[in-house]
Image (cartoon, rainbow, N blue to C red; front, side, top):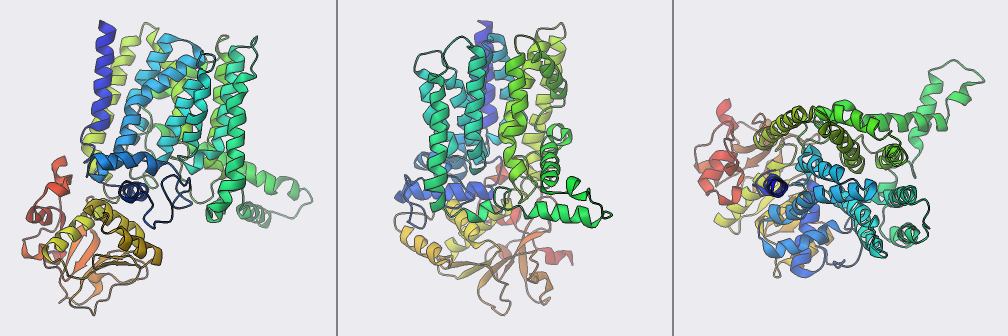
Length: 576
């Protein structure tokens, strides 16, 4: 009875932390979510992409930077709700609820230890990484979930049950571009572990998933990849572009005395080792893992907290020690040695030093080691001390997520774009025919965001939308999104521009007689978007800064026009 109550409590915890205020927290949609979301909405309405050149079953990404299947998995939820934030996030929220049990099932399959399996369920349930990313629809989450689910099925004891892992692995393969190269090594690792478990049993049947993954990878490389025009993306990896290695070598030789032994220690191979080691060690930086996780590169996440708890440092060390025991050594060492290899997406990528998503699978596997450390503590005399410390750690993260994160993550998560689309919706409601021009560095993203939040994509508008995306004019409903500088000579058109643009002067530089209002940043109320020739919010008394008191203020669709303007629009001219 006690165990059932604990299980029920855990399920309620998972449902609450993954679904509570899901349409409000996070209060924004990242650009990845916008791209997948608008494609999913298009699938739901017309069965094709926005440009009407790909069907939902075409197995082609809409862009080389994005994967094939995430939008497809979101599609059914656009039939269930009109709220795009819910439709986009429900799939990962469901994964967040079920992942701890999948993870525990995987641990049971690997080590056949029931207590360890349940400890792993709890560790995965409260982990900060999966907690927050279950509420964001990033493709790395999709891929990791299906790779782990496939791994759990792979260790099935039934004669043919493990074969069901093959379609699950394939599903994970098409979820995230960065993890495609992990499929074969991952299944090879699982096959090795199964062999270590059953040394006296033939492993030929268990080779079927591995062979299937090789076939899938070959088909993808030789038949599907050439049709996807991914040359631009491959140029940003070591697989195709090795110019950075030449630059490192040239720099090292230029800053050294001439010597016949210089080529032995300053060449492309040593540069590759140096670069790979730097990326690998940075991706597993203790500071990022346990204190602050990439505030500059991943501001959409809870960067004020690590991906794990501080107490996990001790559990990680205990787990490494536990895996060195005789009964667990071979399998444990296999997983420990695999961690650098599953971080390969970080090592080969040259575009940016962004570790959070590219190492998401590796960070998830670290939970295996932490679970072993938690098991050691649970079986010790200090178990309740560890429970208390862990509980306090969970409460601390919960307070950061539900109280601090809504404000500090909003700006990095493009919340201002959501405010902008809602503002345009109010203008369009009051003045159906008024021309609106939005000056932005990324017209297709902003138009996609507007289509999502305004529910403008319908059977009546799909042809017009397809035409504007194909022709790249980005004109819809008399709203033009253009990558140009603001036309300050136009005294009639409602103009909206990004406040900070390198090649354009801000509206702040215009004549003092020009009246403008702004969409501000949450962190300091500075201008993000400037609005010229407004006839909606200017009729209300606007403040010079904004302050958010509760989550209800992020429910933009529930606010009246006046409440919206007073809360989210400012008039900085009053400051001067």
